[in-house]
Amino acid sequence: HHLIHATACGAWWGGNFDELSIPLSPMADGKPKGYSLIYFDDNRYRVVFKAAGRPAGHQMSIYAPDPVPAHSPEFTDVIVNVFAGSERSRVEMRVGESGAWTLMQPFRGEDPYYLKLHGRQVAFVEKIAAMKEAEEINDALLWQIQAEFMHIIGRGMARPKDSAHLWKAPLPAGLRPGYHTVHVRTTDMFGAQHAAARVIRVE
Figure 1 (tube, rainbow, N blue to C red):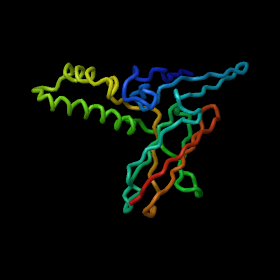
Figure 2: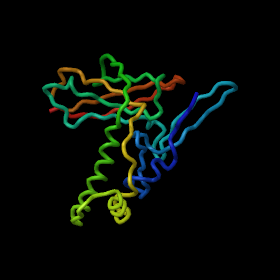
Figure 3: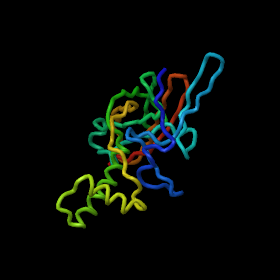
Figure 4: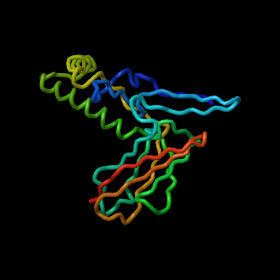
């Protein structure tokens, strides 16, 4: 078992700040900064991921567009980043409090939440560059602006990278306009189960 786990500093303390002025510092694959706990029992072991500064149950993020188009929700994918997920993980989704669970499919891609965070920082830096009437926006200028405004936007975030622990599944057809709860559950290679939920808006 080859384990590549999170780092306590995340992406070198990059990105914006939380309510305690500590950089959020998610990693380029969308995983939050954190660490792994390894428990041994004779010749058996299990690994538990712990996101720094978050409850133990914070094991995934759930993404869907807001709002979801009411005329074709079945063409809208829910994307889940299971932070400690692997090819041995099982990830399932359902909408509402009852009904069948849908098996989600693994795929490689960029985490949509990380793309948003990184995009906001890039947009801010590019806006400042335009205000400075820079003739050319090169890496040197971007680093200069990031250093000048580090107290506002934090250190530069790493460019998004493909994540190996993403899953997706389409929303069911026929969702009525309004608010719905998406439930996700996952079982890891050690048999541990985790669950999360988020509310989506269909209109």
